[in-house]
Length: 527
Ligand code: GLN
Image (cartoon, rainbow, N blue to C red):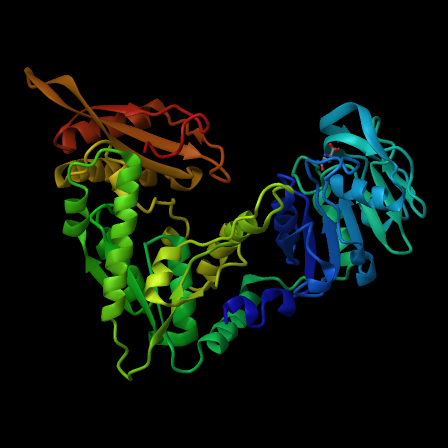
C-alpha cells in the first residue's frame, strides 16, 4: 500500500477535477484554485469516468494544442455529464463542449493571442458575478461558429462573439479565454465563482488542515512498529518531509545526511544543528567526502561527473541505511521520497495521442536494491505550499527560503576536474558571494545565486608581481519556475565589493566575472 491509497487528499477535501488536454497553463488552474483554499487535482483528459478514483465537486476541462474537429484530437469521456456536477470548459475545453453539443467549432479568420477586453452581457450569470468589463488573455486559432443548444452568451469580445457561454440549468460554462493566467485580471474571481459559488467547494485546503490529516495518514500507513529512512540534503523539501515524519512517527524515522564533500561551506554542521538539535530529528551524518572525491579523480565530462556523484550517493545511502538497526528488532520498511505535485503533474499530464506517458520514478534503482516501499508525504503539494508547511512545522525561515542547490553540488560548479583544492576555492568564493547577498538584504529577491570555478588561468598583478591564477564566475538569477530565468541586476558597488573580497580572500583566484546570460539559451548551472 502507498500513502496515496490511505485516505488521500481528494477523499478528505472537496476536490475540483481538472481534466488536462495538454495546455501549458493546466497546472495554473490548480494553483489558482488552491490560492483560495479549494483543493484541486489534475488527471489526463483520457481518464475513464467510471474509473475515477474520487467523486469531484466540479470538473474543469483545460485548454489544449489540438483542434477539436481534427482526426485524432482528444475527447473527454461523455460520462462526465452523468457525474451531475458543474462543468467549466476553458478554451479547448469550451470548444470540446460545443463540439460534443453539435460540432459548431471552426478555424477563426485570424488567430487571437494576447490581451482582449471582455464585455459581460449577462449580469445574472453566477460565473461572472463581480466581474467587470476587463482584460482577459486569449490564446486560440479556433472558435465557436454558433451558440450550442441550451446555452446563452454571457460575455463577448471584439473578436470572439462567444467569449463566455452558459447553460445555467446543468450548469455548464465555457470560456474562450484563460482565467488561470494572471494577465486575465479578474480570472481568479471567475474561478472562485465557479468553485465556491457554483460547485460549493469548501475552502478548507489549508496547510494547517493538511498537517493533521497527513500525520494520521502516515501513521495509518506505517503502522505501529515499522520504521522509515530518508535522505536529507539541507534543502527545504527534504527537511519538511523529515519533520513531518518526525511528527508522525517520532524516532522511528531515520534521516541520513550524506556529506559528499561537495556541499556548501559548513553545511554538515548546519544541517546537524538545524535537524538534530533544532527539530529533534533522528539524524545520521556520514562523511563520505573521500569516497566521492576519489571516484571523481581525472573526470572532466559533466555528465560523467553527475552520474558518478548520483551512483556513489545511492551506494553510500544503501550502505548506511543497512547499518541502521532499530533497537526493538522492527524492520525498516519505507523510504521517504520528497516528490512534489509538479513531478506528479509532469508524469500524468496529457502529452498527445502518440506519446506514451512516462511514469514518475525518482529513485527506481535505489528502491529495487533496497526493497523498500516509497512514502511520499508531499506529493500533493506545490513548492510554495511546502514552504508554508515548513513554517507551520517550525522550520527556521532561513531554511524555508533557501535557494535550491543541485544534487551534485559543487561537483558541477568546479568546471573540469574536481579536486579537493578546486572545491575549496569554489566553496570559499561562493560563501563570500552569498554572505554579501544576505548582508545587502538581497537574498530573497534572488531565486538562486552561486559561484562557479572556471577551468582557465588568467594573468594578474599583485604587489608588482605577476600572478597566473584561476577565474570565478558569479551567477545570480531571478525566475518563478526555473524553466526560464533572467540574470539579476546588481548595483555596481555590490559587484565591486564581492569581486574585491574574493580576489583578496580566496587563494588561487585572479579574476572575477559576472554571468549575464538568461535561460534559455544558457542553463542555470554551468555544467
Ligand atoms: N487549439 C485550440 C485553438 O487553437 C485551443 C487553444 C487553447 O486551448 N488555448 O483554438
